[in-house]
Every structure is written in structure tokens, then in C-alpha cells.
Length: 197
Image (cartoon, helix red, strand yellow):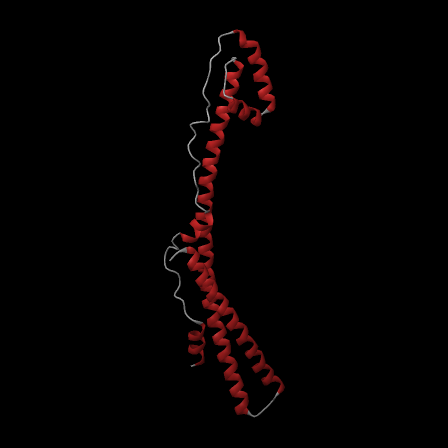
């Protein structure tokens, strides 16, 4: 089962358990009020006490199962975050490597301009966008070096690879395996039926 599917399934279970607990809590309050406000014969009192005890046992069983599901949901959330963070880290690593490569290219363009070489206008523009000050310094130094032999270079950016496409971290995290099987899903009606019997 995928993490996203498991999270949805167990959240629905927790929600249904909470709704059932809320309804049973109201019933228990009503029974307790009847016990306090309507003193009746011994048989009626025992009936209400028995009903209150059954409701308390059912609420305890629901609490226990809900806690089990919530614990599993917490484990799934940790796993989800791990997959998400791993995907984002990979993207950041690649972005950092690309940035470092671009900085190295910009520095090489500046060096070439300072030597008085002719570089493509697109490379000059990249240098200017990166640092206006560095561009001005390189042009000034290059102007002094023009008397020397000029070299002509091709653009450093023309052979860049196509942009890498990244996975969506949310999609990766939701579609990752949920790992070991979670607790068995038991419908609320089964727990309430067992407690009533």
C-alpha cells in the first residue's frame, strides 16, 4: 500500500472512531443523568448502571483502537517526510551544482575578457547579469590588453544539457511504500457490537 493511500484510509478510520466516541459519550452522559436525577427502583438503577458500564467499556475499546491507528499515522507521517526531504535534497544538490558550474563559467568569461579576447555577446550578458561590477572591471582590464593578440571563444553556455525534470516531492512521498503492514482496520460497528454483547 502506498503512503498516501494508507494515510487517507487510517485518517478516515480515526475520524469515524471519534464520531462514534462522541455519540457514545453523549449517551453515557444521558445515562448518568438518569441515574442521578431519576431515583427509581433497584431494577431500573441496575439497568442504567449496566448500560453505563457497557458504554464505558465500548469507549475504552474505541480509545485503544484509535490510539493504535494514530500511532501508525504518526509513523506514516515520518516516512512521508523522509521521502519528501530526500526528493527536495536531490533537487537542491543539483541546483547547487548547476549554480557552481554557472559561477565557474562566469569567472572564465571574465578572465577571457580581461585578456582582451572576444567572447560571444550572450556570455558577456551572463557576466553582466551575474555582477555588473565584475563586468566593468573585466571590460576595463580587457581594454588595456587589446594591444595584444586577441583570441576568439565560443559560448560556454551553448552546450548546456536540457533542463533536468524533477519528481514532485509530494507525489514521491505519497506513492512510496507504506512499509510494514499497519494495524488491521476494524470497523467501528464491530467494536461497538462486541462491547454490547
